[in-house]
Structures are given as C-alpha cells and as structure tokens.
Image (cartoon, rainbow, N blue to C red; front, side, top):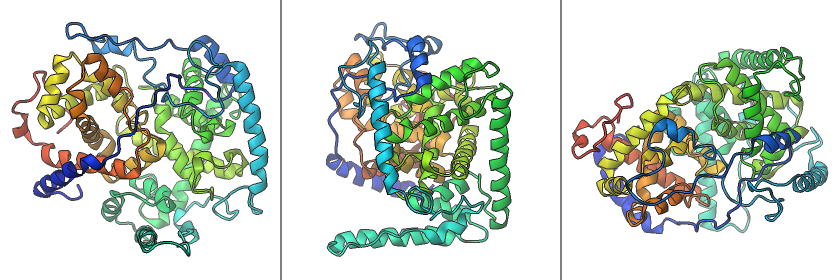
Length: 516
C-alpha cells in the first residue's frame, strides 16, 4: 500500500538483503521450563484437573511425519497455546509439578511477594488519584481528542549528544503530525493510514488504533455519543451475562448459569496469558480479560471462545491502559486495581469493542474446522514456493507440513513468537493496511519463514520443527520488526494477485479465497 511500485520494492529488497548480515540473531533460550502460571485460586483448581500433557516429541524421517490430516493435527495441539519457555520472575525452577507449572507453595510465595510490592508502589501514586494517572486525575473522556493537549513530550537531556537530540526532535515532530490529523473535525483516514504504517507514537496510539478500527467515528461531533453508547452497551452486556447466572461479575465462575465449558476454558487460559509479564499477574487484569472474552464468546456463538483469542485482546488492553498510566513501562508499572473504576471500565469496554472489530475480519479462523486458518496455511505454502523454491522443496522432502508450524502463527497472529511490545508495533502497520490481519499477515509470515532459509535447508525434520516452534525472536528490537514488515511489504508488492508467479508453484493446489 505504502509505497506501491514493484520497481521500488525490488530495489528495496536488494538493500534489505545487503543489510541482513547486520540483523541480530539472539541465542535461543536453553531453559526447559514450562510456562508458569501467576497466582489465582481459580486457576489453581483448574490446573489440578485440567493440566495438559507435554507435547509429543517429533521424530525424523520423511515417510510418516506426524499430524497427516488437519483434524488429527487439531487433536494434538493442546500445547500450541502454551506461553514461551522463558523463566518467569518469582518462580523457582525446581519448585514445580510434573508439567512444569508452579506448585501451590511457590504460587503462595509469589502472591505474598506481589502484595508486598504493591504496598511499596502505593507510595509513588500521584496526589490526584493515588495512582500514576496520566490524565492528572481526569476521568476518561468520551472524546479522546480532548486529551491531546495533555501529551507529555519527550525532553532532551542536557548531556544528550547531537544524534540523540535529533532522534528526540524527530519523535516530537512525528507526534505533532499525528496530533494535527487527530484534532481535525473530520479525520482523513487515508492520511492517517499512511502515517501509521511506519509506526505510531505511544502518546497517540490508543486514539489512532480506535479510529483505524472504525470504533471511533472520524467525525469529531459523533465521538462523544458513540463512546458513551458503546461503553454502556458493554457494561450492560457484562451485567446481563453474569447476573443471569446469579453472580457478581467481579468474582464470576462460582455458580451455575454460565456456559460452564466456555468459562472453564477461559479461566484456565487467562493465567497462562503472558505469565512472564507483571501486568497480567494482577487480579484486576485477569478479571477484566475474563469478562471481555466471556462476553465476546456468548455474543458470537458460531465460534465461541477458542484458545488463542486470549492473546489477541492483550495488545488492546495494554495500549488503552497506557493512556491513563504515566509510567511508560505499563508491563511492569502500577497495579491497574489502583485506578478509578470508571477508568478500568473504559479500558475494558474499549478493549472489548476493538477486539470485536479485529475478529470480525478473521472470524472464520475460529469457527468449526477453522477454514480461515486452513486457507492461510495453504496460501503460505504456495507463497513460500514462489519466493524460495529451494526452501519449499526441502520442507517437502523432509515431510514438513506447513500446518505443523504455521497453525499457531495464524491462530495467535505471531503473538507466541514475539514479545507484546513488538506485536504492538506490528499492529500499527497491520491497522494501517486495509486487510492487515487477514492478508498482510500472510506476507509477514512468509518473510519470517524465508528469513531463516539458510539455516532451515541444512536441517532435518526434527531440527526444523524444533527451530520453527521456538524461533530466536524473543529479544528482537523494534528495528528488527520494522525490517520484517518492510520485507513483507516487498513480497506483497511483488506477488499479490500476480498469477504469473504461479509457475513452478507447489504440487498441492492453493485455496483461492485468499488472493495473493
């Protein structure tokens, strides 16, 4: 989309290939620990009865690779949604159960530690709210543009070098470009998309995302009424969902009346969501995410809740929460429970509606048999054959089925391959693309796969599977992500809708519903 000429793309590809040797490739973590679950009484009970077994070991050879059919594959993917294998602060490596999950005693120790930290942090709260509240004590506005004049611009330290000062000045200039667009009475979305493609400053990201998702109206006169109505609609939806079961929505799940299968799976998955990030270990955060996912599931019975959707809500929650917390490190900042209820209600409602907007475009990923994911996996196989035929043939010779490694890439939108901050940067570009999550994501996955081509063609089946299921991307920087997005743009520019490139394609037919 931005830019649009194939000749420019080809030139850029040459430059990127020259630059690739400089791309850092972090060492793969040698930790063998399982994802570790933050303390939660509900999750402890669920874990005792529902802990899933460890994944099957892959075996080498080309004659009988595992998971030959899609449905057989689905029956063996319980661990696809497990969090990364990094150690989590506060858990002892030796103090876990047979599944690698923390023991009850360890969880209690960490809960006590978190409580002590919360008390210590309470002394740093601002006088206005008793919290690091970015809006200076203001309640959430029904017109986010009103808060643009409250932006805290980065300051230039006195000892900054000229290069550092230029970087800060460039950031300030970029913030002002967004600010000018966002303060317009009618926002030109095409200009906003073009500006957002290269990244959105955190100071204006929340409003920009809401506009690009069509959650906020582009007409400023309609925003207040729309936000008030949508936030109230969500609050009413939560009340209806949980009052029908005779429950208090703040502590759900303790009485009959809910869709117990859905609620049970959500209550298992939420403690496993980003367990290494402090923000997601807080009780308030987990309850917010549970309500969002449950209400979404009951409103979308065709798909219901599917594991992986719990990951997709976290970027929204984190970005919108950051609007009200002054600490730029939202992941390790204050406990959201210290914020006013009106703020939490707004963050929760906005996260719900933006998640809904995102999933509306890819809902066939999550209905029965997940045809959207099957379609994208097939398209990725064909696209890889066109971009890198040597890699494609090697994977086929080794008996590697694309669904074995790319199912999670499509289902979780690479959220298990990268940290949340980098995913947020990727979503700036996805939202700037008109079909970012349904189409551009395919090219990002292709760029990610062929990036490791030189390594993969030297590996056998088992080595390939181990590598692709634990990519060395956890320590990537924003620059690494931007390079990946640039490569994805090149492949999209060269191959989208280009039937001439089907020559020499894969032996298996491509599913044509997704245009390449």
